[in-house]
Length: 187
Image (cartoon, rainbow, N blue to C red; front, side, top):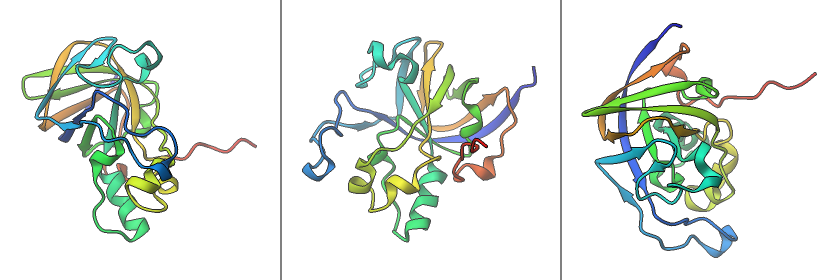
């Protein structure tokens, strides 16, 4: 099986012990602690230590979410806004330099200073209506196909903010990191 390595930058590592987006967006987000850390500990089959999805059976296949910073930049350009806050998306690992859509169904490895974590990329991370409230009007629609991917951690390890490598079994095009992945239409 071919192995492809892509240099990436881990920009943000978000951990929040509670959900912030529940109920109706018009009522506003819950005021919950959220941390953008320099490093996070990942536990196989459980997720990121301290995060709201850690060890929750209903979220085992989606305990870690990867998100491309370029996707949010493309949304800001599409909407004509200034820069948008990547932490408002509530995605755990925000990276630069990785096309994520083709990874669905694959096992990948994220290597950062001091370690590596293997992940099974299970499904796209679809945006919710909250994005119109916390990012900008129209962000919910604009993020479709570029909301990141949800993963199950297969190994224990520590991820660090800064330079890293994404190891993929499929060829990726980093220049497409901000491009919406569209599902093929059925005939």
